[in-house]
View 1 (cartoon, rainbow, N blue to C red):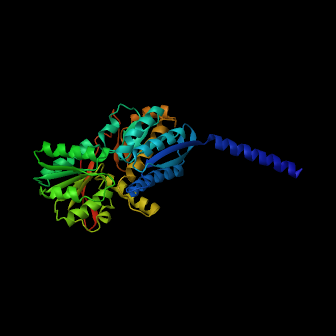
View 2 (cartoon, one colour):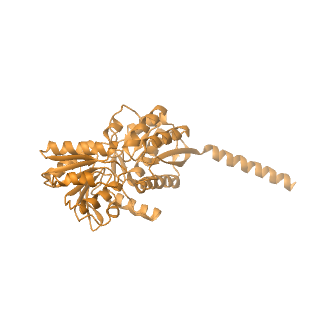
View 3 (cartoon, one colour):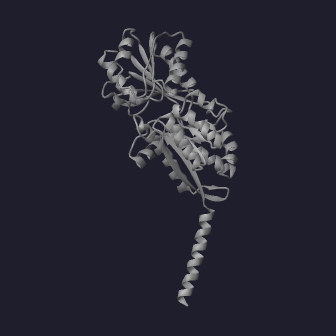
Length: 380
């Protein structure tokens, strides 16, 4: 008799457990960044931002459409390579993810965006700044940072108005990001009556810049602008010092990382580098960012590099749209996501315009002193 009772109790327990499991809604969030290669430190920073958001959402016990949601992170590595980027994009589509945060680079985000669009899956990039990303007429692409028109143009005007540069040389790494931000920087300089004395290019895996820097040295520029990433900018700074080029180095968010002083290996003078990060908080909002950075350090035993807070916000914006729509089905929550306005994130207030670009995006200008990054100003 006791045996029969235990069998019945066990069956009831299995039924209840099965019912609870059936009520749980699994929400898969894809994340893509280069977690291998020269900028793997930036890719891991991004991935950790996503992981932090996912862990917090699960700890809160978020409900969507009356069902408790369990968020799963599906993290992929695109190695900053467009071909690998499209391959992992298709992998996430095949896995039926509910939304994607990424990719890190414009060169991978742009080709991948068509794949997500064809599948109707929303994609928020936390860091792709090439204007073309949101100007393809796709309804599924969004970003939570200002684009290169704003970033590059602002740096170009700053070089002339504030740095008072009389002659400026420009180098880019021929990626969608590097060339795009350099083009916009050049427009900003020329719009203010500044002079571009040379334009050179390299690639995103280069380590020897002797030829282009020697050519630039002959023009004696006050400022060298580099459109590219910190893994290239660091060695470039070392070789500028070796060749006796004392110009300031300016660049976009790709070089504006906490790792740049290490990558420059002692070759960076105080105030020599001026860079801009696409985003920024000030006043009362700064407390939220400071708390995020402290929590991030505690969780991962690592400092924020650049984009982790933007990834964190992007994941939470996706989740907020799902909650408001009462569904994690991309077709149902996409219109709600597109209408996002006034979302209070750690990176500031987030709202999207008709293209999917962030409204009134801020920029933060930085320099480096004593090997540490220091804020100059937040501009819009």
